[in-house]
Image (cartoon, rainbow, N blue to C red):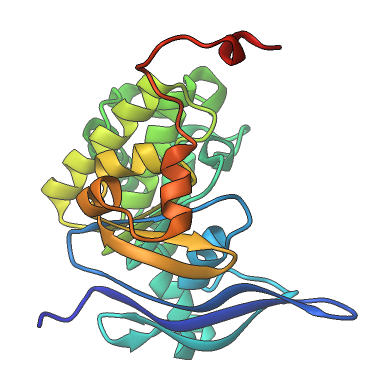
Length: 271
């Protein structure tokens, strides 16, 4: 079998407390293939974002990775020293954070925020960075002449696309998207995810897509894992998760969606 791009093996993560520890991720294993969109779904607090942060080793105390492996093309991220980790972030794994629109610095022009990434990781001068910024903005359907604008001059959806463009500027192998469409309306959500999918096909990167919205996930993912209380309780193709869920929790997630069909009832109008 072809080696997966990303392989999470028996990952266990605790948050250390004064009197007791809280197990946020409990012996979780899954793979993400090259060019694949893999989704992690589950309720808030189930451990999805904790896994996302672990992939780039962005945790700070009291989080502690107890055991397991995080392999990118066979190399264990947990063994990287500080210098190797600095090179690894953004170049190999990029991350779109939850509420990513707020990731942009409000007092810096867009071109300055691209320049910071490109100068730090690729040593580009300002002219080279401007050319790369223009190229990346075109990829996400934003006019390059707007690179001199500030974040507040863009709509929420455009700011989200700018964040995605910055993430893709160094050609990462995988993009981790942690609730990337939070606070966006459903039309803009769809536009953003369609564009990400088009870019994935064009550039060849993989996506780890994290959300609590299972209905949205089924529309964009190749495979999906369902998390509950820190455990990965089910994983399958998106079609099978939708048509034939196996775990009781997955079935309850689907049952929580209101039906668009059927007769009206008195309960529907109860206050």
